[in-house]
Length: 329
Image 1 (cartoon, rainbow, N blue to C red):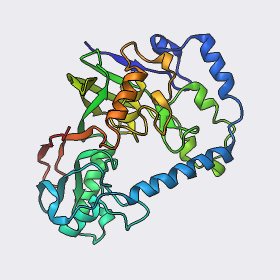
Image 2: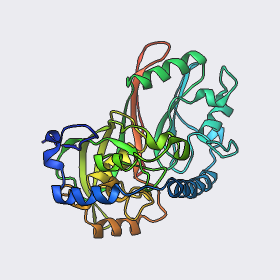
Image 3: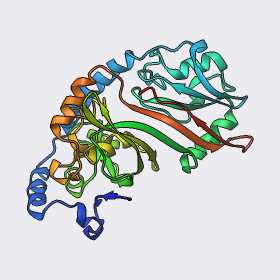
Image 4: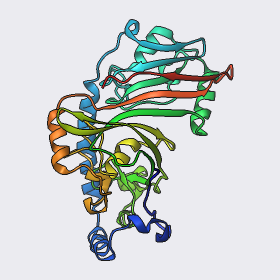
């Protein structure tokens, strides 16, 4: 069976989302609350406090020696590496942070002589799995074009809280920056878009005020499992649109956050339920008690999401390539 979750974006008619819309009364109450002034100073204070925590977390990145890289494929143009959880893909603004990018550069170098000119995509620090790096300028340009035109297929394996009832489906929910929990993401709704009207990009930054991004995730249930007495589901997730934190927000927004997700999961730093009200979640959602129990059981352990496979046409030879990597969970 297939299932499609969707929610309206600003200016989109409500007829397409009638089955997933809150009651008019509840929506009116939320709209009234959200339309109260959002103070730019409060937004920026919250964002800076969170960014400070994230910078500290980046400094805790695990170091990977060049000789310890798990290389899946290499030729004169590209390198495909399987990244462990807990390691930054790129060092970020602080170039002293340990990163996979640095290890790959130390081992292979690049035509440009710059390690940042090897990066064509990235995984979050807590996500393990396959990453492609470019060694030549031609490969960098071509790989960027492949990602930009969505000609790269990436599939992720994840454990999520609870048993997802439908065997396969799509999660079609637009995303926006969360002004209440900046700089994280949330599902975009008309009410939350209207709450931004009075904000000035010069004060809060352009990213916060960007239009909602259409976001589509396809999922397939591989198995419904028991993890230490708690119900979990093993999913294959395909990110069609590739938005920031898309898989995390989408899983949370259908009531099945990723196991070990301390940002979008139970009592996380971002808005719960992907920013949606609990009353708007599907009937098979994982209960708060279950999410809490899983969060406590997994405290201090890596998040259970892994970039399992990647397929694309070689940027120079034009050969069709496909690679896989096994998850550790």
